[in-house]
Length: 499
Image 1 (tube, rainbow, N blue to C red):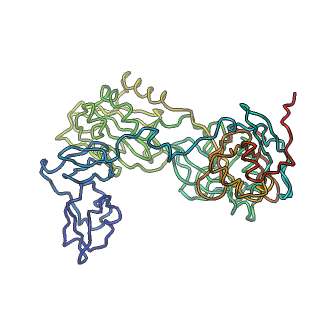
Image 2 (image 1 turned 120 degrees about the horizontal axis):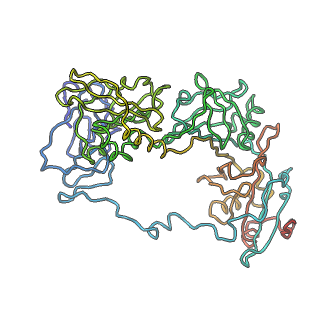
Image 3 (image 1 turned 135 degrees about the horizontal axis):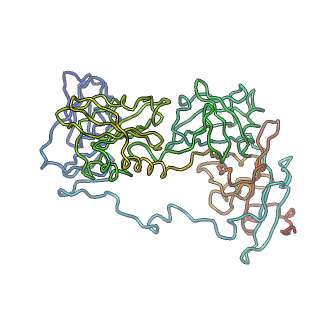
């Protein structure tokens, strides 16, 4: 890279995005030093076009092929990701391959087998109230010859909510938009993860707000896998039920995309090359163009001269947009994604296959002698390829994670020293489960957990007009560790299996 000092105004926008710290600003002018690997990050943020690519003779660098950026790494320097270094003309991985034994101390110990499962669950246990008295059930039994204790309660949690994952490539609304239930705000639309949309419902601020009763009931209903209807502000109307297919604006979505457009090309490049001269995979995240894509180059796809309208990320990968068209983009007519076809590169008779990441829609076009594109019947081979995409997709479905904080006053029902329970949970001395299901305990302070509601018996969650949701919780540990934390030994009863 080089800087045009006349255009450069020293705004310094390029500094925070440079992975190499290869840019300095002196006298209000940017200066690029020898650390630069031509990753192009600075080009993307320079609003004055003051930075441009500069040719470097091949003998002065090694080009990395670990990702689409293709850094040009000089002797003794790193690529943009800082993973590879040029050592004597060879790219070497900075961190060498590790075995599990190399990282075991960092990962930490797992739970001992005797406490992996609770003796009983908190479902139907009743609630510890007031919190100063022992939990309603504290039971003891031997597991593999070890004395084990499980403490259970149905805990009222105002620090609770659900994260709903909706498998769809359809746009639901603008990120951050409020979500309404019976015209009350109950959450917001968050981010998009791997072709799914994430909804956040509940949380202490909404639960304790003026519409907290609506929120509490909704969170419990979602966790119990009941049907619910939600409306996103200036966005979609959703009919959702955990375990079922999402219904968006009255239409059921059946398929979860196999990956973004770039990933789809990576998965099927070999067969795409056999059915068309150029393949375009429409996708709102990354639309793929086979001839430019690294996977296309790898399988020998020739340049086609096709240029797309979308903004280019890296070769063959284009940032899409959002809409109700193909692949969740604004493209209703597949030809609208093509900005131009270079006649110096393209040849008459060239075939272009355009499809999307679920394979639901597909069209084929042929370049005529006049340079226009004519739609033709999709070939049987191309149909089979598109069907392969569809068959590789998973069924679109709705799932949910219940999130709670059980580190509050409910700990007094377990032990006289609540902080010791917190430490025991974080050091795997005590295992926290919900309705018998495994939880993920968030790192840091407190006992904040997440659980897949599909692993908890329907009806196990409830709500109270305090308002709060009620969650069945179990703490399981050895009797020895329970004693060490000052547990309520006087309340322990022997485990008796009913029936």
